[in-house]
Image 1 (cartoon, helix red, strand yellow):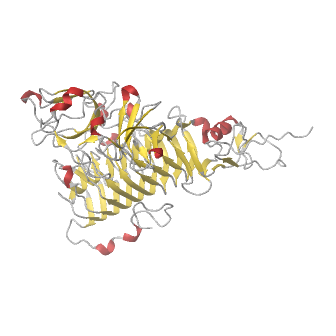
Image 2: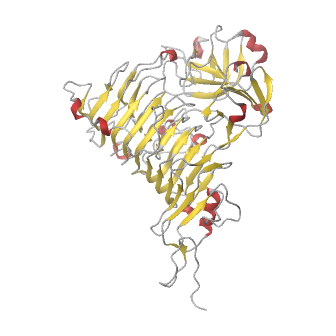
Image 3: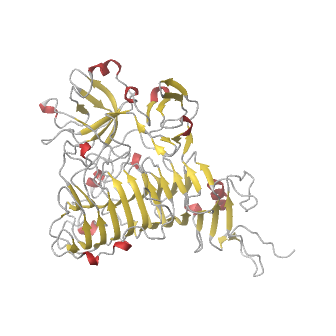
Length: 602
């Protein structure tokens, strides 16, 4: 009967030389159907359907497969998951691309909120079928109803300040004492069990923020009870902690604010424009790439030109465990528990774990509840390039390696030609445009980070780590522009390192060149009580760096703070700075950047 040829879209059984060329292009469209075969004439209806169809095909992969996702909005009800079964094979890749240009195929991690009825005045009310922790109207994040009201949509201020209620209560982390003039006594009669607090715990330290539900309030003694301990105590010798209250109906007093009555599954909202344009998240992660083990990784996958919009936050947040060993697992350096995210908070709009050779190119990520792109633990040779990240709940791009001394499992990543705009919208504490943690051999270049409560870029380990267990080595940062950083925090630098090389002789193995940092000045309404802002801050043993051709604008502390353990050449905090050596035209994203620059005149 002759040779039987099985055409499987690039995944083929062995065939004679005369076999037809395998199909390498498939299509996804909002007009696709359940019975689609992925052809241009009969496309699949979703990326999940494409993934499942390719996964089901057996045999060798004989070409690079491209899944062309046509323009349109694709609602994501559940996280789109990729495992090692979805990897490109036999030296070939599988690419999911926006077929009609960057940003045209949109994956929406939210659905419209419907059924609104006028509650009173300009406030609407509706029942919902799920719980969520952020909300959007017409593509912009709404504000959880808060007290005091924020200065503007772009900033986090103003704040109230905690006080020392009793001398022996200075170290407490679960009771925040308030000033009687800040919290009216009439609130006592109908204290709202849905209320939350957002606090820069630590007294004058403005390092981390906690978002915690309140379990109650004692108006006689003047304190709130938090359902979970905060990162630090609420008082120190210099100050109380800055905080604001949120998610109480009485605070809903201006357009763009919402209140969620969790007990009754009801949402209240005062729209800025149309109540019909309100969206609520359906997922915390839109794309998840996760191999089953570090030995079985997702690999040889690319995502190109896709727009991802909307994802959710969490019911409460604290950065890391409070004390070393709190994770409950034995580690060589249990103090690292205090540095990494707790398991409940290890997610981003795009989350990668156990991956290799993944390309994320020309993406547009916006309105995330937490991280934008999050690389967790074992990841190698991930590329994030030519992408716009805007209105991000926490860090823009976060690379979090494994525990020190237990294997160098994350590195050789390329992060280039990305514009990261408005980071830390829901987690201003420790927010960074790019954060690298216990990872090395990375290349970071042609980056703009603009508008951050805290850092622009940070590289961190721990000061207790021995040199042989420090994986944050051989990183290069070049052609970087950091703007509008340090807006709401102190004791920081727009470019920041922590505990990277704490033991002599400090080999020079991390390198920074051609970086411009504009003014690093706090929002005055934030009343930030910590030490001042810096351009470059090498904290707790940030040594072993070379800095070449660096320019820093105005700061409220030092332009450069470091031990004498780094090599600096031509920086404007030192005498003899030569501006002609700055390559201003090459700093920041290049002319090949595929999206309009946010806020720029068009």
